Amino acid sequence: MKRTERPGDPWSGHISLPGGRYDKSDPDLLTTAIRETREELGIDLAGARLLGNLPTLSPLSAGPNGMEVTPFVFATHEPVVPQLSAAEAAAAFWLPIEQALSGAFDDEYVYPGTERRFPSWRYDGHVIWGLTFRILGELAALTK
Image (cartoon, rainbow, N blue to C red; front, side, top):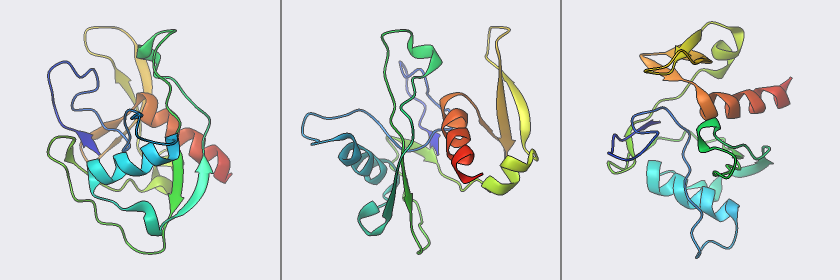
């Protein structure tokens, strides 16, 4: 999804996977992932099959005491149609992962105002880089 642009959000307008902050009312991180996916994209994961979670990662921009992200992976046999939450998601799309993994979308992202370069995919006008790129790489490694 493309995140809604908001002042003060370091990832404003970036491509991301659904997710967000753990809430004290969430009994665990799985509940957080399910809630955030519903809030951001209107996708109810109740009928989906939990495949498990990927290793916990930290955004490089978060610093040594920053946040941690634990991605959860679900599968469904039914088509899923995102319903955008204007507060969270400006757009949503499905990435053809097989094509991405083949190298068809390989690119390099240069972080604005710096010389820092990151591997990325460029697809349909979107740049997938950073933590989202790393998470999808972790998922791809499990499918080999």
